[in-house]
Length: 475
Image 1 (cartoon, rainbow, N blue to C red):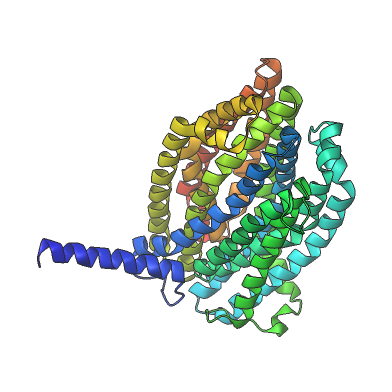
Image 2: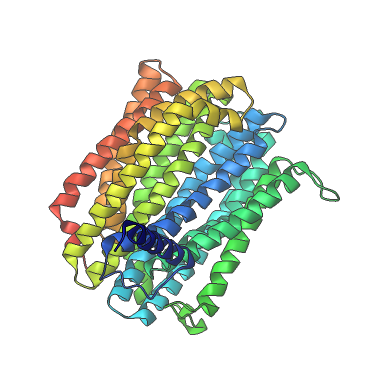
């Protein structure tokens, strides 16, 4: 075989794998065959899915960053997103439980039980978000002020917060249903739903914010409307494929009848999973409030700008690490423990390469990236400092994400919950407070505390991974 023929054959294999990943192929057995191919088939759509989720915030940030009173608008978007992290925590916790149970049932070759478990998770989501939406609509202004916003800024942006928290069910369902598809091994559907949602958001944002023809300019409120409509369309796409798709999951209306035994089993996994993400998100909320009180409106806007950009890079890495959750869940279900371990190492290696590349990009070009999103010089200066300091820990973030998804995919949700509690509440928050207040470093102290704490959390994750409790968890 000539060298040219070998190259053509290799290119053909790569192209076929990419096409398979983007199209979605539930016929591939993740409990046998090439682990590298399994990671790639799952990771490509998951990375693109999470990249699209991060685009929501960046699109809003770009358009509101060029409005009049942009520091108020940026702060409102950022503080609202910080509060929404609690809802994201609930959504991720529930989706993680759904992924773990669905993946385990698929690994056991029981797709009917997998479908029923997914539907019970949706029932729980409806119950929880009914209360959250009402609370957000009534107390939006108070929430912004509590987060460190000035009264003037809160008056300017509370309606944005009302719409975003009021539509929390769309956020929950988007995460949750994607978790169900990922557990079944169909990450492509999850990816496509986020693409559709984001395309709608990108089209609607400039129209609803700035106005177009007969459509009036809604300003900051337009950003919330565009995001909510986009997410709602994405959910409709997911629901269509749940009922009428050709995948391994076959949904029937009867599956929506409450099964309290299954709901209890899901909550048993989801509760610590939700808690672990609530612990992390509450830490981020505290940090946002600390920056707002020590750095003022411009300091807060700068931090939020840097944070949104950092999330744009980190969420795709989280998507890649999600491959570990599906592979671990399915392989443990198939009693392939050694294969589950190899899947973790392969995913971690890919994530380290990705995050190292991103770290170099943000350190070298951070100022140019920031300049694209805001024209306020004070905001720009703080944002550049924040992004460059926080990006130092990117490699450790990447390893930590894979370990968290390994534990969660195995159903061992208490281990990462404990790690997060000690890492965020007993280490990151006190460190940030001491540096910002006691040493008078202000926002800079907060920025430094973030990569230091994330590194410590990752080291703890490695320790507990090697202890191996996650291999013995029954789901």
